[in-house]
Structure formats: structure tokens, C-alpha cells
Length: 395
Ligand SMILES: [Mg+2]
Image 1: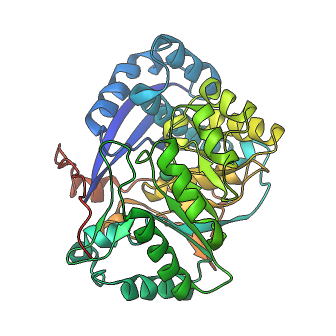
Image 2: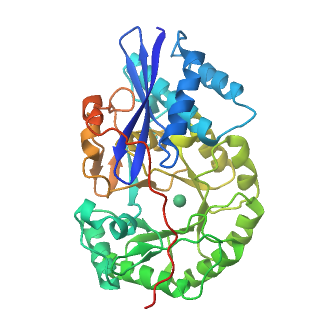
Image 3: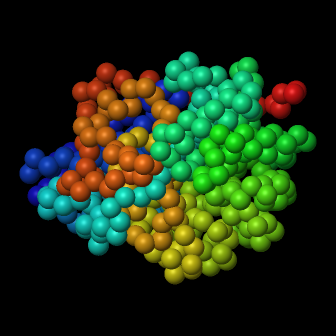
């Protein structure tokens, strides 16, 4: 079998762009991978085209060798946007290999370890705050609206959610900083948000808060300490400084999660060796499948549990599901329920979600293909608006 074509495919996902890779072969088997990064779809597509000549004409079954070839050619700038392009191609190659053998991808990696994985409803309130008209969801004007949303999430079978610093209002918005400084009043807004969600979702329910890169060590520590009474699933933050992260983790009883943007095994290693976080994130579309499994296996050797980062299209949900089915040390997996209303049209099969769990596909490859005709009707328009920084509104 030989690779005959490598094609970047981009799709309009409303406030985001989905980036996919299609790899075609002379055997008639087509593989798909996802490597979405909302802010860099054009760069990713360019990276895929730059790697095309490296693998065209090669045997797609030699996935590890082809991935190593692409990685070696970019070894002076590991990870990053080109790393995502390579990850997307690698995932398309695993899809081909699974289809060629007639097995799901997790079976190529020793699975299934599990046949379902618990999900959490991610960006819960975050998208509804910003895009209620597009989503057709109620506006989040007051904290009671957050409570109602928490109730809805539990009623729809989920047992966990993750939110960002949503400030109810008219319009509502999500708090972000430019300078990493925790403004007065934000801790109160955070505890009000978590209390409102807890009231709606009930007691036997996990809630996580993701503050991304918004706070430095000082601010993140204050937020973590303020959240201690709430028994959070985790407080999630991002930093490139493993020692700074460890300082936050050591200074609180709140569980600290981090790592979504650490996308190589080498970069991840010091975070694990320092026990810098309680729960690690790993991202398949940014890291690649085989390397994500290596990171989870290495995390297990450090007694750290992992949670796949997944806020993209359904293809990524299938891919992350296979990762959970190929590894032991997984706590829970992310998924976005609120999304562009036309997201389902892009796929031949949809994720099967039962009682807040993803049922792992046992179909060959990932278990879903792209509906390219549907994507062609929703072409990526080529640019995204710049997100603003929210100033704290008066109460
Ligand atoms: Mg995150």
C-alpha cells in the first residue's frame, strides 16, 4: 500500500475552525485525522502541505517511521503548530492502519482497556455566555441561570462539568486577563459561579474550573485556596513553568490539573518528575496518538492520573476515546456539548454517549469518517475575530 495524497481540510465551526487531514492510498483506504487549533487553521494547513512530500509514495502502515521522519525534519522547532500538523497526519495513518486490519485503533495499542469512559461537559456556560443566539440557549443574566444550567447538565445524564470564569450579565461574558493579575472581586465571582452550579447539579456531581493562562502563581494560589471548601474535581491552569505549577499544587488542598499545551514527551517529563500537578491533561490532536499514550504511561509511572483534553469536533472525541481505551491511568475525558449547530453534519457516525459516558467505538479505524460534502457546504472562511479581554463589570 502506498500513500497517494495528503490533504488539509478545514471546516467552519462558528466561533472556531476545525482542521482535519485526509490521507489517501492506492488501496482505496482513506484515513482521517484531526489537529484543530482554533487560532491557527491556516498555519496548520500549511504544515500539512509541507509534510506531504515526506510521506507521499510511502507505506502508510509504517506509522512510527513516518511520524519520526516528519518529526526529525522539524526537530529544531518541536511541538507547536507544525507538531499539530504532524499529529493530524499521524492520526490519519492510524485510521488507515485500523481500517486495513479491520480493527479499532485501540486494538493496535493493546485495548480495549475499557469499553466506555466517563465524560465531563466542558466549557459549560462559557459558550452559552458568548453565543446564546447561535446556540439557541437561554441567556445567562443572573446566577440563577447558572443554577438552571447545572440542573440541565445533571438531567442530561452527566456527572461532571467544567466551566470558565463566566460572569452572568446582559450580555454575560467570560473573564480573561491580559496581565495575569487577579483583580479584586474575581474570587467572589468565582465562588458565586461554583456555588450556583453546585446548587443546580446536586451533590453527587463533579465541578472543575479552568482558568487557562489567566493567572500567575500568586493569583492561581488565591483562587485554589478560595475553592477549597467546594471539593472541586479540579482547578485547571496552564503555565510553562513546572516549578511554579508545583508551588500552586503544594499550597492548596484543591486538586490542580494542567498540561493540555505540553505536547511532547520531553516537555512533559519534568512536570511529571516534579509531581507538578495532581491531574495531567493530554491532547491527541496536538500531540499525536502514540505520543499521547507514552505520556499517559509515563504519568502512571509517577502516580499521576490523566484526563484527555478534547474541545474540538467529533473526530477528536473518537480519537481521545481510543486513547482512553488504550491506557489505564485515565480519570475522565473532556467533551463539548454546546457547539456549532451543524457540527453533526460533518461526520458519518456520531459519538455514542450514554449516562454521561462515551461508548468506545469498536468499528475499524477511529469509527467515523468525514462527510466531505457537508464540510464543503460550510467552508472555513479564513479568519477569526480577535477575542477581547473582559473588564470586570459592576455588580
Ligand atoms: Mg484547559
